[in-house]
Image (cartoon, rainbow, N blue to C red; front, side, top):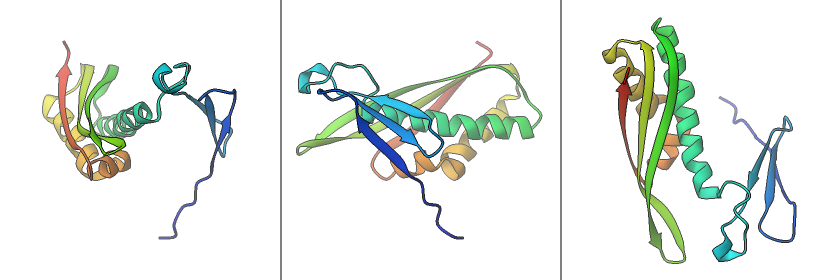
Length: 143
């Protein structure tokens, strides 16, 4: 398979730590640092964006798999908690926990299978993050 090349452009939008990332389709994400290092917290931190990406990537998989399994999703969200540790001047996530919250006509075993397939096989973001963090999951189904 030929490699896919993606292009993202990051533009500084003020004299602080405020940046706008733009993809090839013109979609944008606002990034900023916290006040401790000169930012204004006007956007997502780069580290938070990793957690958001993991939740979004896995959610696309889970929803797609459940639809193929003919499960009816009425409501869906993912809550992510993570622990960061310092490594020299930088830090990394030590643990990342994704808690899936769904309502609908969904068989529990099918939900378990969809989450497992996403995190272990399909979600590229989780697979990348798993090289440096322990990724775990849980779920709540219909309250």
